Amino acid sequence: MFVDSHCHLEMESFSQDREQVITKSIDEGLKYILTVGTEERYFEKVAEIMNTNPMVYGAIGIHPHNSTDFNKNVAETIRTCLKQKKIVGYGEIGLDFFKNYSPRDAQIKAFREQLSLAADEGLPVIIHSRNARTETLQILGETYRNGNGGVIHCYSYDLETAKRLLDMGFFISIPGTITYRSAEELTKVVEYIPDERILAETDAPFLTPHPHRGKRNVPYFVKLTVARIAEIRHQEIGELAATMCTNFTGLFLKDQEVPVE
Ligand SMILES: [Zn+2]
Ligand SMILES: [Zn+2]
Image (cartoon, rainbow, N blue to C red; front, side):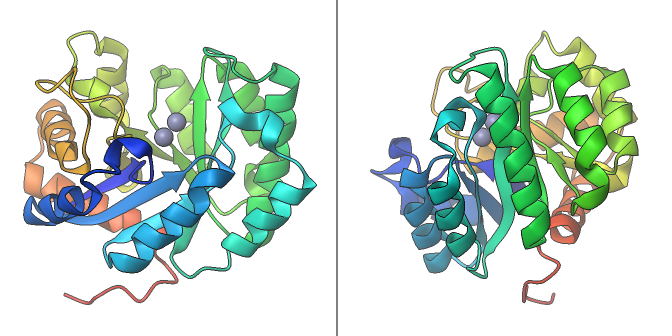
């Protein structure tokens, strides 16, 4: 049983075949999917998908790319949306100094304010951080004690950074890039992360793993990523996948009525 701990089923790339993709994911052995709404315009769709599919859960937040959209009104809308039972995480939030679609100051402000909103609401956070290692470590270092834990999604930094984030109690989620030939540093991270802190994700429709690179990514491709992680860690894939399900449940589904096996 697998879990895709981060994808974007609400996005337009899935508007033609969303239900088929979810059905196929169940057939392929996925037990949970977390779909992450990154802008206000997606929040309703996230709710619709999670409310019609028992194995899909939702998270919402304003993505760093859209930091300039975050204001008091949006915060109120988010607070209302968070009352829904199957919204289990806050995010993705963070800093993206690679694309810089929003000015850095705006990103930092939105990140801090949303971390505090998530803490108020008792939700774990989903962190997006790219080319912003120092600032991310600093802000999380100041705030993590007030929070409810969380995950660094699409992990892309080195081992030293991973150690610091693990010390703060965060989970680390490995994307499909681990299947690419250039994944040397990420391989070291994958070797190091303790069993009880590791997750895998697709970030579908983005970051398609090998050998499907170039095509749209889908949640069940997470199996390729888990297979590669298992190979690196010399673990049995079924065991690792089960560990990841336990980790996902522990982080996000503590208050949910999940089916007992
Ligand atoms: Zn992201
Ligand atoms: Zn994402």
